Amino acid sequence: MNSYIHGIDPFAIQIYGDIGIRWYGLSYLMGFIGGYYLLKYMAKRKVICLSVDQVGDFVTWMAISIMLGGRVGYTLFYSPSTLMEFSSQFPFWGLLEVHKGGMSSHGGMLGILVGAYLFSRKTNKNYLQLIDLVSINGGIGFFFGRIANFINGELYGRAVDSATSWSVKFPQELLYWAGYMPQKLKALYPAVETYMKTVPEQKIITQLDPGLWNTWVQGFRGAFHNKMYNLINAIIEQTQAGNEQLRQSLQQVLTARYPSQLYQSAMEGFLVFVILVAVWWKPRKPGVITGWFAILYGIMRILGEQFRMPDAHIGYELMGLTRGQWLSVVLVGIGVGILIYAVKKEGEVAGGLGPDAQR
Image 1 (cartoon, rainbow, N blue to C red):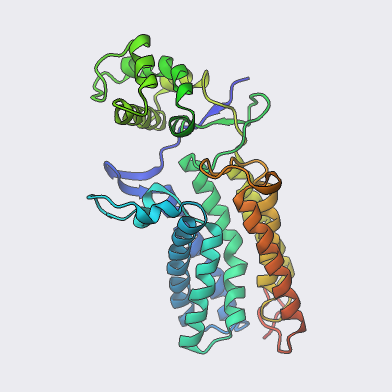
Image 2 (image 1 turned 30 degrees about the horizontal axis):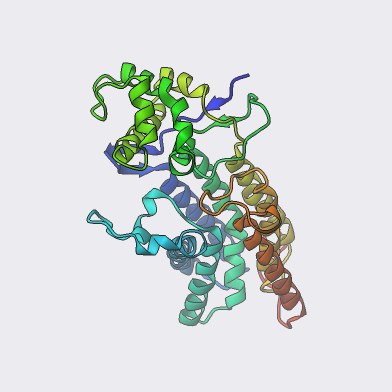
């Protein structure tokens, strides 16, 4: 049984070249909009420390904190070399190349801790309750964010034992071959041939035969490196543009994988949100929701990453776990500590999503 060949255009609206509105950006926007309306609902009922007028400012602060923390966290946890990457093209510094992907959820959480602290100092609001307000919305953000990962064909899953109707083959796997298993590119020639036949206006190559292609593969690290990368990217772009013949050629060479992004969207996003709503149906002491979020998200991330490929340049670490799983183990421990502290700390309860909730 054939798997689904991933071929979703990352642009919702493409204006020209790399300029346009991407689904990835829209996913963040949907998360922030969802969070805004949930907090506005709670503010209108006067069960939180924010007024209706303050909700917009708080969401804006958190949006900036998540973006900055997510990007910086990715470079520190997964790709420190990005800090040393500079180019002559905008945005000039690898750290700022968010359009190429590379955001860390754990880094985003650290960004929230800093941003909420600064906001609490500026407005004299309860810091723990502000973190609770972000935590209750965390599931919404992860729900949309992981769907965007699927649309981008990034953070894809581990190989399944055999192709099934629900498994997915990601053309982006070709970039993994190029970076870490270039000899596997020999099997790509049928797709290259299909590309040459179906995209006659292509300017990357003029004519390739199997022998010349094998020469390119053998010299991948040398003179043919840029040409092959450009060709691979062009093949990926053509699958996203709906080239059915090319998709069928790739069906024969790509690996059937779990759609782990969708699993994680359901687990880290929807399920975490539903459980937190149940926990906060009644008012809780500030910090309780944050503790539960850290525990729940950490557990779901650990389970979800059992279906996801680890970052190629890192691989598996101690006990066969990924770096994301180990960071989540730490997060669960932190969540337990926060929960114990919040429950024992004296203070009034706040929040609540149920109809009888009062401040």
